[in-house]
Picture 1 (cartoon, rainbow, N blue to C red):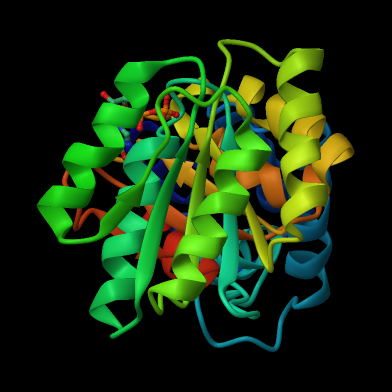
Picture 2 (tube, rainbow, N blue to C red):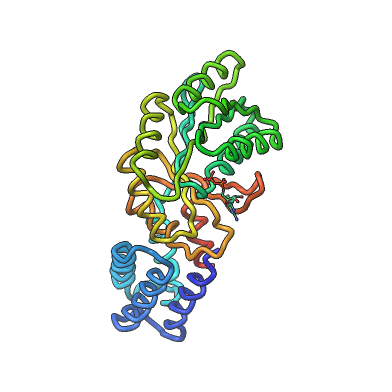
Length: 294
Ligand code: GDP
């Protein structure tokens, strides 16, 4: 994960090796390298500029009094800035209501169905009674996929393959959950290959009708800048509560992880790193920053 970015940042700090103290010139060179590394990793240009301007300002502000080397100092400042960029604190999902409803949105292929299964498994392990609901009314294969996952993790899946009204299916699932003591209903929705009006209308209708305590937007981190643009389009329409970054096990360049929070102003809540049901983690900005810096 982020191998290239880590390497380039490391190289940027190397430019300070052997330097006894921070000067305007050596900081400027390093900061320029850091900015280039971030942009190469698909971080939005404006975000990369803001972050590196902050790094420069902090480094210059800390001048002489420090006992650590310039390289160590810049690494520490960059670590803090990346943590701050990704939101600082980890933010949990909100589970409220009886049943609590969690709505899952995103483009087709982003990893929605896989994540729905993972989240159900994660919550089940916390001792919660979960019901998965298949609301992809366009692709029978998606319903089947959720059913297979449900079986694998031992979580019931509610589906009505003949019904073409996503809101009705979800409402029936909620009634089913109430009757059968499921405390959380996860609603997996239909995606499209690109943002379109019809999909947005449908997901907005679901959100309005179900009043979920948590709406999560799932996005493929390998899609770089597009991930950020898609997040923006969904958030403008849906005002979601959190982001799930998937496929962080691939050779993603990292840009999505680094810019989504700043651009969309919504926290990343989970990261998915593989196809297996266990490959899900809560997102901690400080741990991610440490990982990026190696
Ligand atoms: P959906 O169309 O949004 O429901 O997407 P799916 O859940 O069907 O996922 C699309 C493809 O991505 C499937 O082949 C999944 O196995 C795969 N996938 C999902 N999440 C991850 C992940 O975190 N890492 C990897 N490598 N593959 C994933």
